[in-house]
Image (cartoon, rainbow, N blue to C red; front, side, top):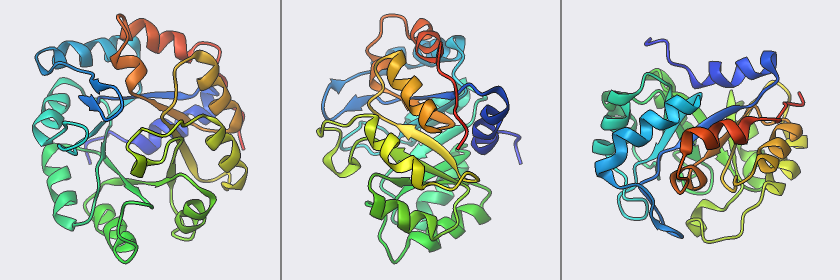
Length: 237
C-alpha cells in the first residue's frame, strides 16, 4: 500500500469535526464548457494544494469531460494526495488501468454502472487495493448501495446521467443522509458554490465535499478552498 487513503481522509473528519474538501480537477464541464487550460494544469493543481485540499479527483471520460489517463497521470505526478477516479465504469480493465496510473480510489455510480456488474467491479477494485465509493443520487440508488455494505458512498447532488445540466442542490444530500448508517462514510458532490453550501452538507453529516466548477472558475482557487471550508462543522450522524 502507498499510504494514500481517501477513506482515512474522510474518517479523520470525525475527530476534527471539520469536513474534508476534495477538488474535482475537471478539464471541461458539459454545462460550462472548458474550465482548465491544460497548459495551466500543473499550476492549478499546485494552487489547490496550497489552499489545503485534502484529496483530489478527476473524471477520465474524454467525451463529456475532456478527461483521460494522461491528465490523471499529470495530476498524480504533481500531488501526493489521495486521487479518486470518476468515470463510466463497465469493465475490470478500467480498474486495472486505474491502479497503473496511480489512482487510490474509484467511484462506481449506481445509475451508470451495469447492475449485473456492480458487485463484481466493486470486488475486483478491492482486490486491486482500490478504495470504492458507491455513487448515489436517489433513495433507490442509496438502497442499492447500502445492500452492498459499503465503506463509503458519494451523494451526487446532480444526476450524473443529466451530465451536470440539471439544477442540483445540496438539498439532495440533506434528504438522503438521514437514511445512511453512521458507520458509512459520505462524500457530498456537486453544487458547491458558497461557504453556506459546504456548511449545509457538513451539518447534514457529510464527512467531505467534492468541489469542481467553482474552484476551476475562481481567480484564486487556493483562497476559495480556505473560504469554502471556513465555518463548516461536521454534525456526526
